Image 1 (cartoon, rainbow over the protein chains, first blue to last red):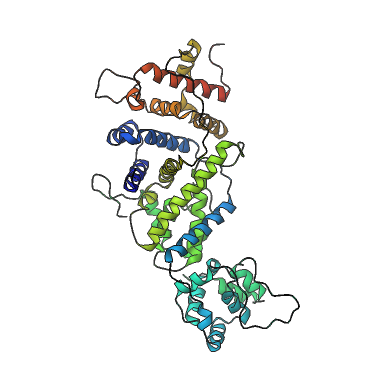
Image 2: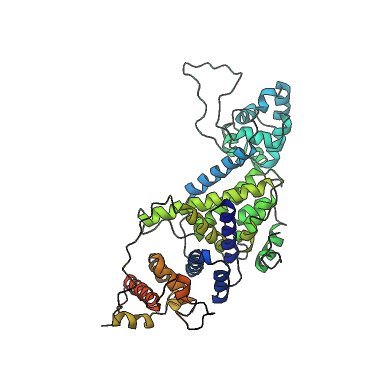
Length: 196
Length: 262
């Protein structure tokens, strides 16, 4: 069966699903026009009947699966973007970074949370993403694309430690980053506010 | 919405969805996110799944990944809620592995449609703004069609239903079990048992049950009439009766209802 037919069949099933009535007349109409989908239409008709009968039953929430799904979707989107990801912090001057830090009124650790990709960009309010993107002279899309990759080591810093420095194993939320950088409570609330 | 029905008219949202959207688009996004936490579908502030789909699509041109992410996560919870149960008393059974696999496949199909919609406005998600739960049921059907080859599905061994004669007890039992009524029981636990009993029937029997519930005639001398016998493509109406009776017998057994012969 060709891909085209697959799509047509999918469309038929979706159209049947969203019919306002699922009575005998509707089922028969679809069975007559799409006899090759008879089994699927009947199965779907029963599935919908049973789902309605089960409505109201509590379903355990599977947050692990929800997060997996979100990650899978983000991966799909970044693959679709396709273009090479550039590092906007590499081209930003130290003056740019200082100006950005002052605009937001945050310690440099917060900016570093972005340049090391430590912060999960999905947890950052849009207006902050916007400000950071402008501050390092890139687009919001490019900044997001850069931020989706794994955390990395800070560049241009010297380490006074016997142990080799290692990049963070997992991303943290924007709020956690602010806490880590000791941003005061009221400032933190201001930065976390959704301004849309 | 731009998706057209076969008659050329465009799909529309339900009135309750339109009303809710009118209210939701006036809210701050933080308030929308707060409203997503409401689990009681009867609450006036509950955000219908159809609305979530609409709100997600409406963010196509902005870059608020946080807001979009929260909507997306909630929609995934809704998908879990409308699909046949994955966890529960039959956890770790073959049926459950099958159900978990189906959930991933449905999610993947939905993700595909969503990413197409994010790139360019289209009609692919319109169905999900009309009737989300049923559109997901259709997507599950499509997912399972595609998975038929890869799914390690244990085919049930079915009795040769063309030749065996049902016992008198089974014949009698059919008449006394009104499945439509059973599915309307006030007891949600009992209802879920009835649902499970129907879901575990072999495909062939389950389909006869659905057509029986739709009150489709088993057979007819009127060639223009659609009958169960014709739909399932068998020559004898006896086959239809046998499948129906075997299904009822299994359901009664699963529900612990006697055969009616005692």
